[in-house]
Image 1 (cartoon, each protein chain N blue to C red):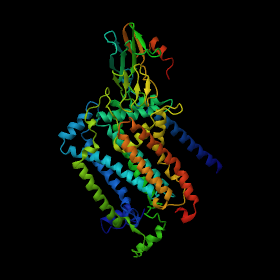
Image 2: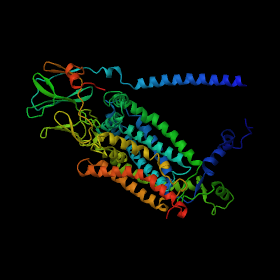
Image 3: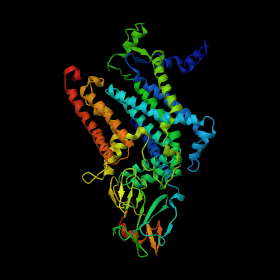
Image 4: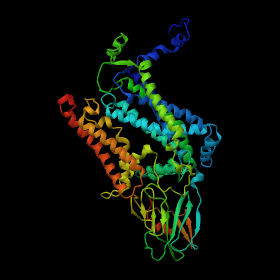
Length: 168
Length: 421
């Protein structure tokens, strides 16, 4: 009787073990199925020529479906050594143009030299640092490389690594 | 196998094979409903009818809708609205019933809270009901983004971004949910799958469990009176129909339900035919643009209260970022109703709110506070609006923190059978 019971227990446990292993593998497959496709992940690098920009002008370009703000700083805008990018002798603020609160796109207000997010009233200064409202951190800096007066987005150059010591 | 005789008729033929007579008795003619209940108890049947309307209209929309970011907007706004005969009707029925079903869900919920129908023995009904509310929310949201208009696009952007607030895995999780670095085609197709297959299946299953869980502790009544359903049913079957406190679901009770459903459908089709626009945001008639955010983003009216809780905290407190507090409050708001049976510490006493003075005040404060949250959730969060939203959010949180305290006080007060009057 005892032998019978333990044999049945073994069959039960063996079946349960196989089912659990299969379940884990299936869950792994389901997770992978929802991952971005390779064509999405390899969304290309973008090169932006900064030499034609005027001082105080904001340019918005699209990179990996996200807006990137490039602002050529004028002399009256405060410098931010931790965030400014120097290329071709000029200072630029480059950031992913998404509010760090919930991802809306803030708009540049030239009169106050601020980025304002209409969704929840967040405000950022000309360097992309949050100054008011719910955004928890400055706008993110996209990975970039400086190539003379050109900016290559998507590649992590030495200047980028200096600005972003370690990225989680 | 049971002995199969020659059938006396079609019903008898079925009865021998499917026990239909027994089934009809259990489900309809001997399913006992208290007499002492008002029209608010018909909301369950109204919801069932609205859900059926959603499924039927959804099937007709599904035949022309195209889940592709290049085609989705036109398939709705051109093909369905202009080319398909009566396509506009199905869309308006679908849109309006999606909106109205939430109004009825809220009435259904607050009826349950008012009469204490979530307490003592009816916890599973409450829990499955709240699970249904959660699934309906996911269903409404996933459907809202399908027309690929500006508001639905940015709603999807904001809602998927909420997952970014989860520590450590947040950002990777957002990309995983979207299947792209932004809300894109992969996101649309998977939300389409959720909206037309997975979530409706889960909802149907939950409805079955919700109904089943009602059968064992039975329906509550206006006085929250406890009585023996079997004794009362016996009286009814013995012909003492006036004396008995119960009536059968079919045909007696459903006749009352049909009347309420009739009134509800009159209002519903009035809305569908003359005021369908209240369920259609004008910004959604502009195609989605991932490079331009609408000036002011807000969800449909039924999510406004929890949206306002999310953005109620607009300044950092004690070094904790406003966004994190907001997310925590939002999470709290979305699970706290689920816990209601366990927050009410007056466990033994089921009574309507007007027989529980402290709870009565609590109930109306909660309802008013949620209306305030809803109104301010729609307004831009600037100046005084932000402070009203903040105050209402705090009130909401405090009310739920107070609930165990006031119900415990009530339970400790022995006068009037714990009713404390």
